[in-house]
Length: 219
Image (cartoon, rainbow, N blue to C red):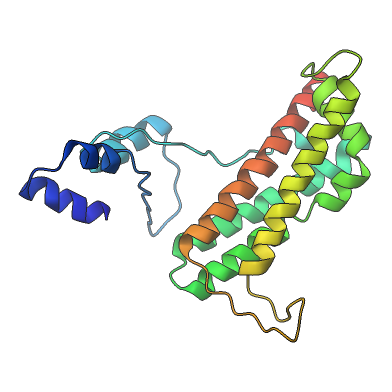
């Protein structure tokens, strides 16, 4: 649709409402090169985004979460910090898989990798009280008589998000068995399915990593 719109822009006039709608679409840009190398944010904007974007769209940037300071986690958060650091590294590998994925089978495998990387609900469940205190109260986000209750609700909501992501990924990913063997299931996901689950996993684990870093800085 994006390429077709560019051709039509040169060929004819568009209605004002259609032009507005087209210009405000989110258009993904995929880059691929032979060797891995880093590029500054400024160079990326000036060297890549501006030249390819003749309509000067606004872009949503989702930086990959860092694991800075997680190695310094105190004993009561150490196992959680180590697990989240490990799973974020796995998501980085999955992100690489998605960049080269071309078939429905490839996308399904990306979804499986994403699901494995967000299997953190069990350890979070066991530590939700201390997480609530460390991530929301000690950092000053919540205070007052009802702070602990609200902090635990926040942790519960995060656990629900992770559970729902796992449920979505389980239905679309490649797996040898299904929950109901009398009703065989074949999943043929699109790139958008794999991309959505990967980005949601990155955002959720990245949010937890940032909360952990803030807590570690306070200790």
